Amino acid sequence: AQEPVRVLVTGAAGQIGYALVPMIARGVLLGPNQPVILHMLDIPPAAESLNGVKMELVDAAFPLLKGVVATTDVVEACTGVNIAIMVGGFPRKEGMERKDVMSKNVSIYKAQASALEKHAAANCKVLVVANPANTNALILKEFAPSIPEKNISCLTRLDHNRALGQISERLNVQVSDVKNVIIWGNHSSTQYPDVNHATVKLPSGEEKSVRELVADDAWLNGEFISTVQQRGAAIIKARKLSSALSAASAACDHIRDWVLGTPEGTWVSMGVYSDGSYNVPAGLIYSFPVTCRDGEWSIVQGLSIDEFSRKKLDLTAEELTEEKALAYSCLS
Ligand code: NAX
Image (cartoon, rainbow, N blue to C red; front, side, top):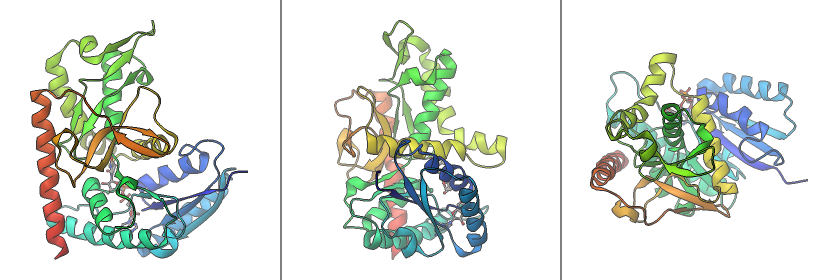
């Protein structure tokens, strides 16, 4: 039998956590043959609720679930974990300044970075979901210098999946037949959902470009982009709560593809440490198109970037550069 993999979920008593932990325990994250031990972290005010989640995990009798650690102690939570999904954070509340929210999250991610660095398993892979996701991941990277930068990422797969969903709805095709959209940049409303390289597999087996099939550049350059950018707000308006099941599902997609690899000819979007590819400033956590193999991602190279796209790539990079400066100003 395979050794269990230890998976940390922070903020596990929250909405996304509640949707995510059963997916992990069912094998959605690492496949149906991989046993897991869940480590769940939350803060003391949520301890009782966290324990309730643990009770439900026991009650669900998941065959793959070999153990549950539910704790408010960050060291206990991080000890020995192979994968860390960081969902916990400080939410923006009405009337709060951006700087105040940033400052709270910077201190959370700084502390959790140290705990992971000291106590996680070697080669632990980290996915930051909590907002501001890119900048939280950057802080985590900065304060866990012994964790390779290749192992630290943030979630933009939800945005990627939203873009696939919009194209599938518009063309009335299966979402599984649409591929190679790209989310560039920040997981915020400046992200750039790019369909210039996306294709659809037709019933004949032939692949056609999304631009050609949609044949409506005004929609693709306008409403499509803003719908994906604003989808989070639309979900809040409808549900009175932010996206949770789709966020949890996207987090599983992100880790699964990272660990098990992307299918041949398919890329996905991940927020990763920029090496300057596509003239994106190095040193930001920025969402790129990536392929994954043997547990490592690489940025897809050589895609053509037209003038319209260039401006959008730069705009979201500028926002991330500002966020980075704001985060650093919170450190001093
Ligand atoms: P909830 O408020 O339901 O849950 C957050 C949980 O984190 C709470 O249980 C809270 O007690 C816990 N928490 C707070 N500080 C913590 C700390 N220092 N250590 C451990 N746990 C801590 O929010 P939820 O709807 O689950 O969303 C979680 C985060 O995901 C938010 O930051 C949200 O903005 C972000 N999102 C990111 C998305 C992405 O695509 N990257 C999409 C969905 C979501 O909006």
